[in-house]
Image (cartoon, rainbow, N blue to C red; front, side):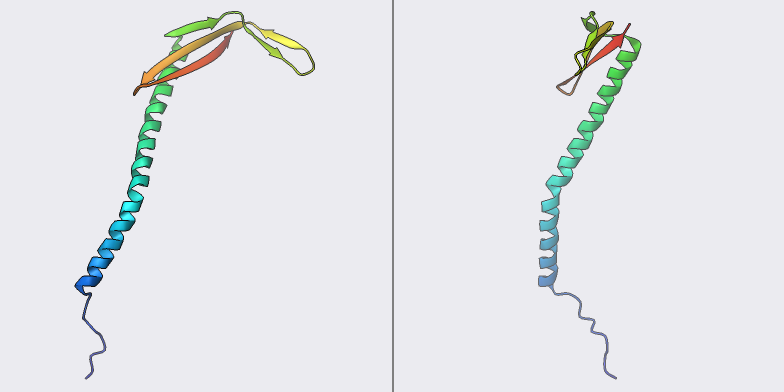
Length: 107
């Protein structure tokens, strides 16, 4: 009876060529993966810093008053409104970066 299935397998050259191609593809994607990981890590740190800044704002702690005169809103028709209040500055340092939020708190 004739053997229908050929059980020869792959040659050594075919295996080396396929491993070389897989290595080249992996090498091409490696910088993309590491850059993405770095950005995810940085975004996580920024998120933590922004959360700490929000806590400082809510607790009215570690803020610097910039302006206590209020703000003036000018409209295109020439009218303006003065809103009494204070402008504050809150800062947070993380990983050699300085994050600053300037916000207005009405009276």
